[in-house]
Amino acid sequence: MHSPDSAPTPPPRTRKRSKPEPAAPHCHWVYVEPTLPPIPTPEQIAELRAAEAAANLIAEQARNRRSLPRRRRSCRVGTSYYAHADRCVPSLRLRGAWLAQLGIVGGDQLRVDVLPNAVLLTRIEPAALPPAKPCQ
Image 1 (spheres, helix red, strand yellow):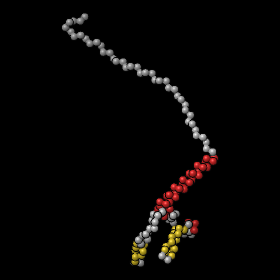
Image 2 (spheres, rainbow, N blue to C red):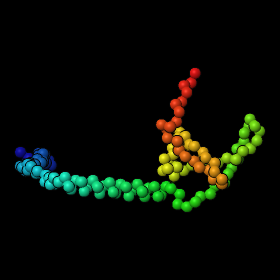
Image 3 (cartoon, one colour):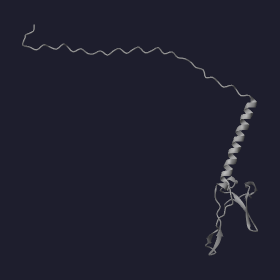
Image 4 (cartoon, one colour):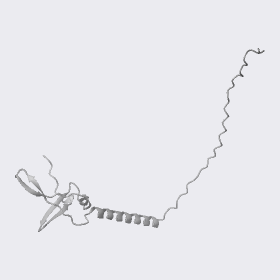
């Protein structure tokens, strides 16, 4: 058996067993139907469209008020140089979002009328323009 001079042998190693995982709870699916809003009547639809159109009109008018000049503006007439005539001529540049609000966009044709102490710019409708000549 054991001799008194020898050290006692340690007990054999045992592997720790992990605790068994608890069983997954039973899933129970529940179907939920969404509640639908009531269908609007034709009169309610017409009221909603009229209110939306009025709101759009008010917003458009507000945008137009912001972009149009609120007061008279003044500008300084500059000069440009005509190289072929070797002389300086008066020059005027107009730019701004207010031109687009007036319906004037890049590429439009303008008619310039000179009145006493005034210059009148009028946009020419594209249908009124003569057809462009083809390049040859």
